[in-house]
Every structure is written in structure tokens, then in C-alpha cells.
Image (cartoon, rainbow, N blue to C red; front, top):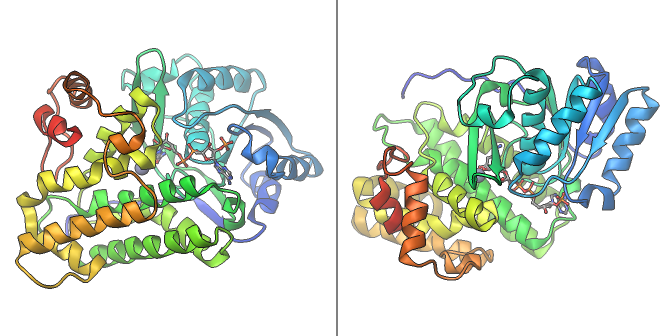
Amino acid sequence: MQSFTFQSPTEIIFGRGAEDRVAERLRARGASRILILYGGGSVVESGLLSRIEKNLTSAGLAFLVIGGVRPNPRVSLVREAIREGIAAQANFVLGVGGGSVIDSAKAVAHGIANPTVDIWDIWTHKVEIEQTIPIGTVLTIPAAGSEVSDSAVLTNEDTGRKLGLNTPLNRPLISFLNPELAFTLPRAQISAGAADIMMHTMERYFTNVKEPNVFTDRVAEALIRTVMECAERLLISRKDYDAMSELMWCGSVSHSGFTELGRCKDFSVHKLGHELSARFDSTHGATLTALWPSWARHVYKYDAARFAQFAAAIFGVNAGTDEERARAGIRHMEEFFTSIEMPTSLAGLGIGTPGKGTIEELARAATANDTIRLGCFHPLNAADAAAIYT
Ligand code: NZQ
Ligand code: ZN
């Protein structure tokens, strides 16, 4: 096991009615002027936003509400919210929604705390920041894990780039997780979220670290199996509280860093996927299932034994050589993605079949013109990326 430092400081309030404790807990954490951010309207329709507003009003807490965050969130709305937050002297940002809203909330908090900096300069590492204001989340979809993660992903519509920023400043101070809030999710979002949760652990499981890491492996394998089982149950009955609870908690654990301890993360499929979202506005989880089988077939030979372990632990594949078991595991995972109605090719993303020129552009964008390598399991250059997209 490699040495590590782990700090996941987010206070988690989990269970039915968790959001009713927003005012009490935010006040305890020093919030007095709260900027609430939400998305396209699901939290208005469900009545969640008005419940939170009532809760804050009764507690005498001042707040300002900004909606309109889109999936694959845009930097332009973040800039607008930063201006309004500064004008209102907000000292806390609360994201009510999914990963897109929460990532935007993180960026808004950083922008308010660093008013002279353009937010995109932080995402492109032109400027390093050292402070932010506290961030809270009320989660409505188990998926991105942003409610605990140290990461936030923004899209710049002017440059066509979708970039993640990793910093401990991105860890929310507090997150409210009520599985019932996810009962209104459409099937496609349940599946895309489940796939994203699985991939946050799979992109940490397939790594180049050779030292044994038994406990982390077993946690990872149990998490992946749990998510698969619960996704299937939720596609039959989306109001299954027990299944939604497991999925939501797995979503947080999967991207907290806990399934990475003692090794390093790869995340190359995520980076290839971000290029598809930047160019075609594709749903994040769908980009991952569209690419993973091709990524796996491209790289498994560099450590077939690792893929064979995965096949045995997840699908009970115990017969054959490492190579045979590895290939069977990849095939079973592809079948699982199909069974939960997720795409396993670019054509399945509804973007047609990209031509050779587009594939090369995507591969060059992902690898900064072939100057950087993606991931660590088998570091990918532009030619690898193009082969996987193809
Ligand atoms: O905008 P509203 O109206 O709320 O609708 C959303 C949106 O259309 C809807 N939705 C959410 N909760 C709902 C609901 N609809 C009905 N009932 C509910 N309870 O779902 C749609 C998708 O929302 P979004 O926030 O985009 O989903 P998700 O949580 O999957 O977040 C995806 C974003 O997170 C980034 C992705 O790249 C993508 O931009 N990620 C962030 C990460 C992080 N910060 O750590 C890690 C991930 O790997 C990922 O990259
Ligand atoms: Zn993801």
C-alpha cells in the first residue's frame, strides 16, 4: 500500500427530512447571508426549494436565490452569480441540486472569496487560490459525488473546454442527503448517475500501483456490486427508499477519495468523456459508459491479471486464463451498461458516428496536442485516445 493523507471534512446529514435541518446547521456553521443556487427547475417543481426558503426565513437567515444552472454547467452563469453574491455580501453558498449545481456553487464560493480573479483563470491554473467561503449542498441526484469531492467541473462556452479543478477548497462544509429527494429522477438520470458512481471507483481500481491493497480493493468491489444491484432495483421501482439510500451513499463514498487510498487514480475515461460533453453537450455518465468498454479493450493487456480479478469479484468469472477472464469481465460490464439502457459506443450517445477528422480533434484536445498523457494504468497519448474514440 502506498502512503497517503486523507481528509474528507464534510459533515453529512443523511436520511428522510435531512433538508429540514438546513437552517439549524447553517446557522451553527456561521452562515448569515446565504446564496442559494439551483438548476433548471426540478427543485421548484418538487417544492424542495420553497421548503428550504421557508426553513431559512423562519430562522431569520437572509438569502438570495439564483437558478438556471444547466447540466455541463457554464462559466458565464457562475460569473453572474459571483457578481450578485459579492453585491449581497454572501458568506455561504448552498447548492440545491446535482453535480452541475454543486460544482457551480463551489466556483461561486471561490469567486466571492477572490473578487479580483476571473474564475476561469483558477480552472486553467493561471491563478492559484488559497481561500474560499463555506459551501453547503442539498443533493437531489446520486451521481457526481460533488457533495463530498475535492473536484468541480466547469464548461467555458467561449473556448469549448470542459475542465475539472481539484483542490481541498472544493470540499463542502456540509451536505444534506435525503434519498427521497431523488424519487422524481427520470430513468435516464438514475442510470447515468449509477454509471458515474461505478466509474468513480473503477477509475481508481484500475491503476498502475502493484503493491497489494486488499481492503481498498474489497471496498471498491463491494461498492460496484451494490451500485449495480440498486440501479437495477430502481429501474423497476424508482421510489425504493432502501435502494436509493445505498446508491446515494455509494455516490458519496465513491468520489470522496476513500476507494483510492493506498494507490493513485487513473481517470482517463473521465478526461476523454469531458471532451465529448464539451463538444456535443453529452450527459456525463453516458460519455463514461460509451467509452469504458473501448478503453478497457485497449489497455487490459498491460495488466490482464487486474482485469481478471475484477471479472471474478464483480461477475464471478473464475475459469480460463487471465486474458480470457479479463475479456469476459469487460464483455459482462458492457452487457450491464446496456441492460440499464446506457450507451456503449459514441453512436449510442446520439451524436452520430464522428468522422476521422473529429476523432483526431477530440484526441488532440484531450491530450493538449499530444503533450500530456492521460491516466496511469496505461498512460494514453493522442493515438491511444483516437483509437479509443474510434
Ligand atoms: O436542472 P434540474 O432541473 O435540477 O434537472 C436536473 C438535470 O436536468 C436533473 N435532476 C437532478 N435532480 C433531479 C433532477 N430531475 C428530477 N428530479 C431530481 N431529483 O438531472 C439533470 C442532471 O443534473 P446534473 O446536476 O447535471 O447531474 P449530475 O449530478 O450527474 O452532475 C453532472 C455534472 O457533474 C460533473 C459532470 O462532469 C457534469 O458536469 N462531475 C462533477 C464531479 C465532481 N464535482 O466531483 C465529478 C464527476 O466525475 C463529474 O465530472
Ligand atoms: Zn464522473
